[in-house]
Length: 304
Ligand SMILES: Cc1cc2nc3c(=O)[nH]c(=O)nc-3n(C[C@H](O)[C@H](O)[C@H](O)COP(=O)(O)OP(=O)(O)OC[C@H]3O[C@@H](n4cnc5c(N)ncnc54)[C@H](O)[C@@H]3O)c2cc1C
Image (tube, rainbow, N blue to C red):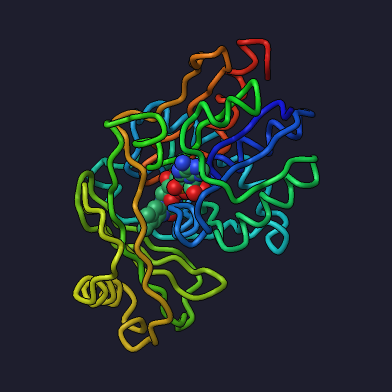
């Protein structure tokens, strides 16, 4: 019997599994979907506390994560994480917490993860610590509890069904990947609560342009009008983007909850379950901080 089953193989599940396995736990991760169909696989990978509540906690988790990502960025080819300089607009409106601004410095530098490389890195690190990943869908938390005394629920939007959580809702985002016309810095302009942000993130596979945030929308079909609008907005910042070849258009659903769920409960039958989901638009940004808190919750029960 495994000691821990982590349900969910996105960034939250894999990071929590890595921490547990590196503490010597026998960990198995169940994940239903291929990466490209998860929020984590689609994510821009920018460390930025965006669309996540509660803000004070998110900032605390983000700061912890920032430090680990900065360390990972020292080996970018192995981890897929780089520390990249950027330009920020919108800070003047007071939407960016001052603690975050002082952390990223001036000019700002923040980690960016290439999720196509970073998720495999996490899986490799998990395997090196003795953990395993399986393609497997859980019909209930009880199904996992039948195979392990400790279950960690990192199912993102899947928690609607798995934990019966009606507070979870999707926030749809559409991203465009274009050939990079030579841009090496990120750009971000955002306003609190706005459906449209403008961002440009240099990734190894191309220049990633964003973005949109449609509350409650669930359709993951790319909208060509949105693609045009995103390219136009970004081309106003960097005119070279206007003629850049489009390589890919991606749509993902941010797993939003009015409050991230990080808590322990005892399941019927006695297994312990720690929930770690609902990270909205910042699941990568807070991943290490939240995973650490999930492990502390297990510690408090004498199981971490
Ligand atoms: C367009 C877009 C851009 C984004 N950009 C950023 C960014 O720049 N920076 C940032 O920090 N965040 C960003 N985000 C948000 C970030 O992607 C999410 O917060 C994060 O990926 C959530 O990770 P997760 O592991 O909790 O959930 P997910 O990545 O959704 O993973 C959930 C996992 O649970 C599994 N699962 C679900 N139900 C079951 C079940 N019943 N049985 C088994 N497995 C199950 C799924 O298969 C999957 O493996 C962005 C999101 C989108 C959509």
